[in-house]
Structures are given as structure tokens and as C-alpha cells.
Amino acid sequence: MILDVLDNADRYAALNPRFPAAFAFLRRPDLADLPVGRIDLEDGLYAVVAKGPGRSPGDALIETHDLYIDLAYVIAGTDRIGWKARRDLGPAAEAPDPRADVAFYADPPTHWTDVAPGMIAAYFPEDAHMPMISDNEIHKIIMKVRV
Image (cartoon, rainbow, N blue to C red; front, top):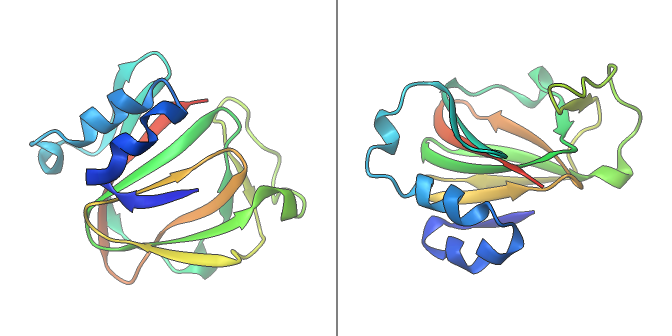
């Protein structure tokens, strides 16, 4: 997991060949005006614009991905994201869907991080995470970066 501000993102560019393009996208001046939904950028890289009410931990499941890194950037609101090491998870709550590259677990997170506007948080396949936890609305971009 990585937690930092977008201004420091170039420090992580060498971790994945698609990170430079992902960081460039997140620096767009019109980011807050993009419509909700998926934006395809290049092979192995797309953005998901999310905007809506946060949820409570009791209404969410922790998730993992095998093929993609979730690189979250918060535009407005604060996303309180839960984390747990994937190796410590119990069995999946339902059969994973490999086409969707997501598996859900009933495990509670072991750590919580507040991701505020201007911050980035990267969750790798070994990082289980529970996003969109808030009492308020969250506007964010999730960059899906193929490993």
C-alpha cells in the first residue's frame, strides 16, 4: 500500500510502467468535471470516476484484485479506507468473479486510513481494502493499473 499526496507521485513511477500515465491523468485540470463512469486510457489502464454517498463499514465488504492495482485519488470528501493483509484473510464471502477481477471477504480491516482531497492511495494485489467509507459524499478517481 502507498499513501501520499499527488505532488509526490513521481517518486512511485518506477513501480509500474503504467504509473506515469496514471499520474498524468490525475493531474488533468478538468478532473472534477469528468462524468461518473469508466474512462479507457490505454491497454491495462483505465479510470473509474466515482461520486456518491459514503457507506458504513457494516454495509461494505473488504475486497482484493489479482490483475489490477487500485490507485485512488480523492477530489472531494474524505474516503476512510480499511486495509488488511491479503494473506490474513479468511475465505471469500462469495465465489470470486475472475472477469471482474474482484473478490469480497467478510473480514474486518485491521487498519484505517483517511484519504483526503489531493491524496493518492495505491492498493496492490496483496492489499485487501474497503473503500468509500464516509458519513459524507465522496468524489474520487480510481485508476485501475494492470500489474
